[in-house]
Amino acid sequence: MTRLRSGIVLLGLWAGIAAAHSPPPASAVSVEIVGPDGRVFRELPVDSRDDAWRSYLQAEKGARYQVRVRNGTGDRIGLVIAVDGRNIIDGRKSELIRTEPMYVLDAWGTQDYAGWRASLDAINEFYFTDWHDSYAQAFGDHSAKGVIAVAVYREVPSAPVYRPRAEEELSRPADAAAAPAAKSESRARRDAAPGTGYGARREDRVFEVEFTAQAQPVSRHFIKYEWRETLCRKRLIDCAEPNRFWEDDSPDSGRLGFAPPPPRRAPGD
Image (cartoon, rainbow, N blue to C red; front, side):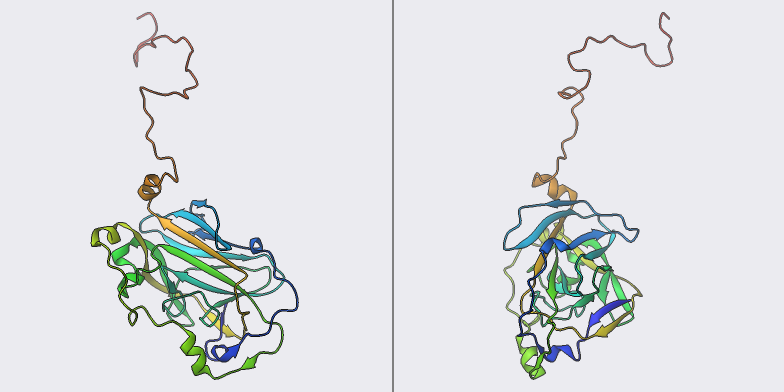
C-alpha cells in the first residue's frame, strides 16, 4: 500500500538539520510515464539544466497514465509530484517545496501514482486530454501547462524541531485562484495543447506516515508532454512521410531492375 506523508503531524515539522551523510546520485531515482498495462510512453531526453532531469514525452489523446518512480537507494524518500503545476495530493498550486503534501517511497521500492487523490481510499485517474478539459485549466492555472514534475527529498534522520503549524501554512504559495491572473493566451493555442484530466474514480488506498524532508530536493524531474504533431513541428521526432518517387535510402538503389509481371499473370503470358 502506498505511503502518504502525514498532513496532520508533519505540516508542523521543521527540517532544519542537515543529513549526516552525502546525498545519493540523482540517477538513483528514476521517473517514467506508463499506461495501466505497464506500457512505457515514448520519452525523448533533452539537455538537463538547473540540476534537473528533463525530457519530452509523446502524449496520446484519451490515454490513461501513471507516474512510475523507482527508488534505487537504501533509504526511503519523499516525493512531491505535480501535474500541470498542481500537487496531485491536494490539488493546490505546487512549487515542489518540502512543506507540500508528499508521497513516501520505501528503500528500493517502485510505485505508480495514477491520479488526483480524492481521499485516503481513492483517486481520480490521470488521462491525456485537450487543455480546456484539464484539471489545471478548471482553476485558471496555466503556469506549468503540460509538465509532469517530481521533486525527490531525502529524510532528515535526526529528531525534528517543532514550530507552529500556522507558520508553515504561510510558507505555502497561494492557490492560483487567489494569485494575480496569468498572462493571457489565445484560446485556440491553449486548446491545442495537451493537459491532464480529472478522470474516473477508483480505489487506491494509502496511509499516513511521519516523514521529515530535508530543506532541498536531491533531484528534480520534469517531463513535458506534447501531442505527436507538436513534437513533429519542433523536429524532436522525424515525422516525414516517405516519398515513393525519391527513396534515397532504398536497398535497391543503384541496382539494375526489371519490370515484374502484373498481378495474377505468370511470366511469358
